Image 1 (cartoon, helix red, strand yellow):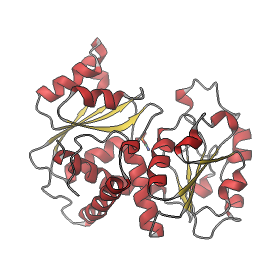
Image 2 (tube, helix red, strand yellow):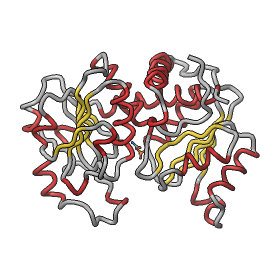
Image 3 (cartoon, rainbow, N blue to C red):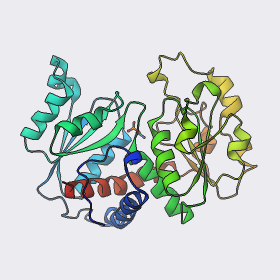
Amino acid sequence: MVWTKKDLLALEDLTKEEIEHILDTAGSFKEVSTRDIKKVPALRGKTVVNLFYEPSTRTRISFEVAAKRLSADVINVNIETSSVKKGETLIDTGRNIQALKADIVVLRHKHSGAAAMLARHLNIGVVNAGDGWHEHPTQALLDMLTIKEKLGKIKGLKVSIIGDIAHSRVARSNIWGLTKLGAIVTVCAPKMLIPVGIEQMGAKVTNDIEVALKDADAINILRMQFERDDRVNFPVQLEYFKTFGITKERLEKVKKNILVMHPGPINRGIEMSSEVADGEHSVILEQVTNGIAARMAVLYLVAQGK
Ligand code: CP
């Protein structure tokens, strides 16, 4: 496939073939991280700027590692010491980064649509590293890469996404990506954390954790995003753990080879017990490792886009 898109903004925008192409490209980049010298020259001479307006551990480091493994130069903007603090707008910041001859901006922002807006104003590539409640496309790509690697396929698998669906860009990107690739996706949460219209994206909905776990090949457990709603629209934590939390006892009744996933950071004792987070079914740290290859693929492809 010849890649033509200069930006990666949302999995909603991509075809099944485009998503598969990213996953195949990621698969071929995985080997680079196993070498003694973990580098290929694919993006030598290119500059990637990480522009993160929200906190991040995994995504920011992973994009930096990915870009460096492709031999790109990487600049991490510290928002706290940047002119954003003097009131500079996102578009002006982006235009200045473009004037400094960067090739790709990786943007995390608290507002849904921020990456798409920036992409409309720049000629250089924009990669969405999470925009508000909208999408986190590279998280879903690394999730799908992990499922494919562990279970050999995605088509026909049953994947349950459990937890704070309402505030989750990870849920939205996973629903778009997994359903396009033929998985059967169920979302599970208390009613207050199920957004209106989620079925129209192709997901089944349940408020019963036993239904979500029954026959699931993989469960993707989401963090309670307390920071997004001032702790107003959330269930009581202990009550949530009792009713929806994933425990060793709950996993005793499910498929033997079920994958336990979480995008991180985990609220241990709220979404799942530590026993489960660190247990035999958990692929949480393998997801993090796969983030490097997924982001290498995205950076490599958008660098070829027009
Ligand atoms: N999964 C994820 O986006 O984690 P960070 O917020 O640490 O980047």
